[in-house]
Length: 308
Image (cartoon, rainbow, N blue to C red; front, top):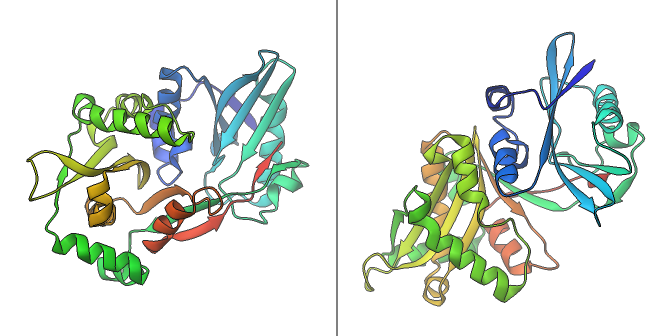
């Protein structure tokens, strides 16, 4: 087994990480670098065949110690048994080319109770969080039937209200207003999220204008081209990730966000997307948002946590 650090190109990652979360996409790492957050990438090979990919984001503790975080990874290639996964984690932790003192963290994309982190002798330092995935490979009627009753009623109300849903533009200047709105609501509500510059950086790194999709809802009785709600999605391989959501007071009253999510499902399916990642569902700090995500019929999974 050998590990190649920072030598792989985008094509290798795109080929093997098509079903991986956005945090393990090559373009996402390049976007992080573009906004000032360094990354390291590892390709683990055995007998000349790739077995795993691991992308780490880097930072420092008070400028004295280095930390590296492998979020929702590594990406396993083929059928990799737990014993081999454990060995790979050990090797990554031991061989990462970073100066000491350092702290290496893994937050695997694996459910609660996954054995391989502990087989690797790693210590759990954070309990797992709930992430929400929606399988959109199913028939649309099945997806709609799987919605919670109140969620489906809000969708029906929005459809009856005649709200217009449009693609809000693929160029950064066309969706800058949404980034500005996200910046404003971050400051007013005091929550943490990636810098707004990450979205256009991701689009550039992906080399595909379709990597970012913005859907907006407009009031048919209001001013033309005036959005009352919007969502931004990141596409990657056979997956897509909910990135930003915004709604005006009118949008909330009309249930516009439910309509946007339903339209997102339909349009992503047309693009060949099969996994719609709605992100974390924090029922303690963000109960309302968690209920909204679960209401669409998505499957909650508690990840196994952070290890070092």
